[in-house]
Image 1 (cartoon, rainbow, N blue to C red):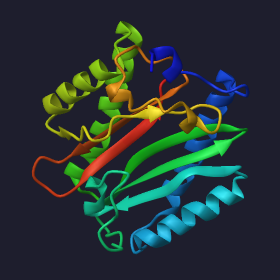
Image 2 (image 1 turned 180 degrees about the horizontal axis):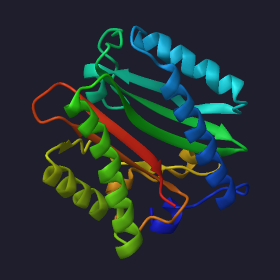
Image 3 (image 1 turned 120 degrees about the vertical axis):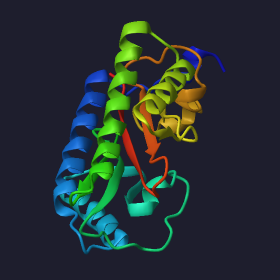
Image 4 (image 1 turned 180 degrees about the vertical axis):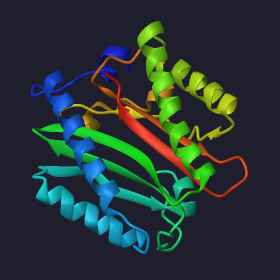
Amino acid sequence: MDAAAKQAVGSKYLFESMKYAQGKTWEVVDRLAQLIQPGMLESEATALCNDVLKEAGMERIWHPVLVRFGENTLKTFKQRSDGDPRLQPSDIFFIDLGVVWNQHEGDAGATFVVGNDAEMKACADAAKTVFDEVEQHWRLTGAGGTALYDFAAQRAEALGWRLNLDIKGHRVSDFPHAIYKAGDLGDFADCPDAGLWILEIQLAHPARPFGAFYEDLLV
C-alpha cells in the first residue's frame, strides 16, 4: 500500500473537525485527572471515565478507555493490567481516551502524579518533553514516521529514560479510520500529514517499576 492510500480519508473528513475532536478529548482527560484520587481502584477510575464521557456528550468510544496505575503504567495498550491496584498517596497514573466527536476520532493521553515522588514527576514531564521535541522535529524537517521514532528513542535516552518502541503511534480520521489499514506511524517511512496521525510516547524508568505515556494528534 502506498503512502497516499495509507493517508486516505472518508467523505466526512474535515481538518477542523479533527481539531475539534482533539480539543474535546483533552477537555475530558484534564477533567478526569482532577477526579482520580488516591484510594481509588484502577477499575473504579475506568468506570468514572466512562461516566464522564457520557456526561460530556460523546458519540461513542472507538477504543476502550484505558487507565493505568503504578506498575501498570509500563503496560502497552494491548496488555492487560496486573490485578486492580489502588492508587497510592504517592503514585503515578495515565489516562488514554479514544472518543468520537462530530464523526471524527479524538485520541489523547497523558500521565499524572499524586504525592511528591520526584522521579515519577520527572518521568511524566519527560514523556511530554519527548513528545514536544519529536513534534517539533516533524514540523522542522518533514521526517518520516520511522525517522521520528528513531529521534524519539535518541531523545528519551539522552534524558535518561527508555522508550517503549512497541508503541509506535497510529492513524486517525473521520470514523472509522481502521478501514485504511495504514499500520503504525513508526513503520510509516513517509512524512505524516497533519491531522491524520497520533504520535505516542511511552517511557520507562531505567530501574524502578513505572513509566509514563503521552499522545496527541500531529497538527
